[in-house]
Amino acid sequence: MSLLNEIFPKLDLNNCEDYEYSKIIKFLNSKKEVDIRFQEIYEFDEEEETFEKYSEYVRESEERYYYTYMNFIKDLENITPDIIKNIIKYQNEHYEDNDYTKSFKYFENAKDVIDNVELLTISIRNETYGHIEKECIKMFPELKNDIQYLKVRVLVLIFYAEWVTDDYKLLSVALVNEKVVFVTEAYI
Image 1 (tube, rainbow, N blue to C red):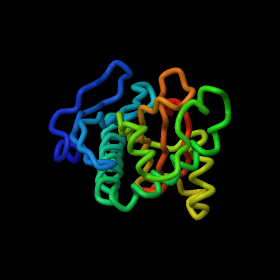
Image 2 (cartoon, rainbow, N blue to C red; image 1 turned 30 degrees about the vertical axis):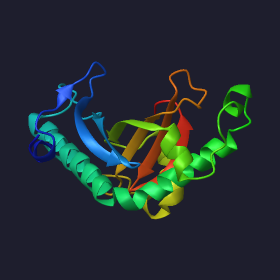
Image 3 (cartoon, helix red, strand yellow; image 1 turned 180 degrees about the vertical axis):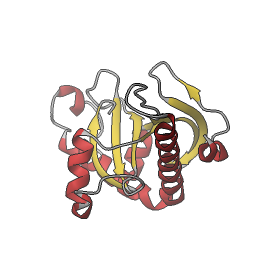
């Protein structure tokens, strides 16, 4: 994994068959070690694909992961206000969903978000799918027929947030090309 090895010296395969690496990230006014996860990095059907085709797929995947991560880190300071704004909006929209959500503070500003979420994982995706793809097409209509190699960078931030109703208390913020496309409870 030549390009990725420049920034992630040793990727480990986790129990979900995703490659990952733990790295210190400065985000929301603190430095914290978070898992950087690369999903769907290798998909190969030996009966249908040649080794050359597989090698090309791996190289393209590595490039996409590398550029997705590097663009995110480079723009993190500029992206952060949009991430905060979207978390506030999501929490406000779901504040009165049930007694549990009402038992937590109503978010009004960035400090409320900083005090009530903790970044756990940055999940870098090899492709768009499902809800991410639908939102991506809404935000980037020019890419409707061209959601492919290096044109779409998909990354999901996974936060621990006690105030969500998901059983695992996880909140996901999906970004495409460094723009928030949606926020949801649970791991996506």
